[in-house]
Length: 97
Image 1 (cartoon, rainbow, N blue to C red):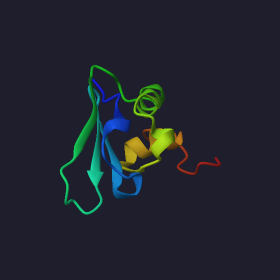
Image 2: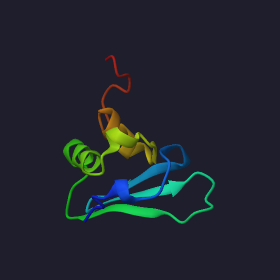
Image 3: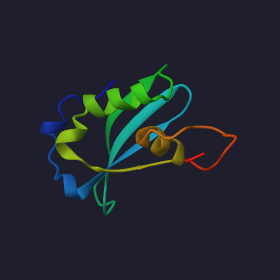
Image 4: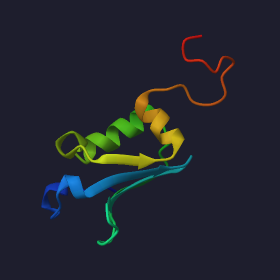
């Protein structure tokens, strides 16, 4: 389930940030107000979708992230997925090796 009518929300993209939380079974996205004056706005909640590059791309496309370009705050695993970094433990910690 996701909010397809993000345009209908009264907001300025500079005043909000996108928080993405994922686990092995759920993927959630909410808009958080920068001053925490206004309540959060849930924009997506999925169940049964694994955290992967494809699921993150679908989520961002579905909520029209390219239009608003909110700042994203998330845990390091989600940030690594969004940046295309290798997940998990690697034999060589250096990205050049």
